[in-house]
Image 1 (cartoon, rainbow, N blue to C red):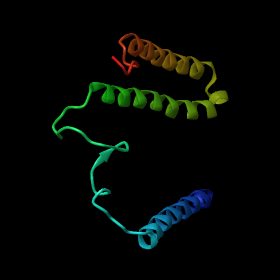
Image 2 (image 1 turned 60 degrees about the vertical axis):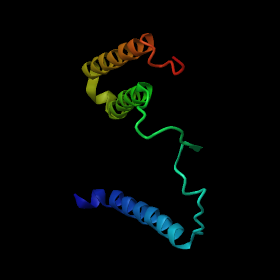
Image 3 (image 1 turned 180 degrees about the vertical axis):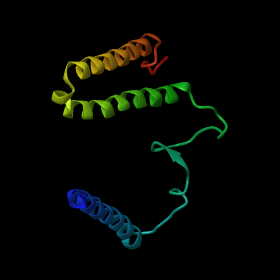
Image 4 (image 1 turned 90 degrees about the horizontal axis):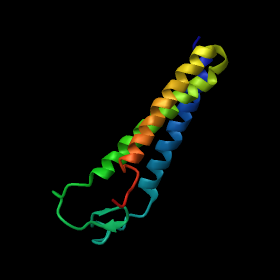
Length: 119
């Protein structure tokens, strides 16, 4: 049974070695010229303005939650699509119900203005 998973473990091991190898080589061989300008904190490529205690807009959190909801949809769609023929009509209708619930969620968020960034 272990021999069936050996290629997967081998691929994960090689991927981990490459990732840690590249990270290690860049940190050891890369230039290290820290300047005062590079040490200034920034967000998304621009300098921060204001104090740290300023509360962020709820739109940032709402966007993150909507992303998670529809990301979970993709997580459930891939296994369903791979087993589509074996699940039969019951599996089809269950997934359609799941997609309808997500569609209603999207329409609700849209009508509430969750997808409008400028409000």
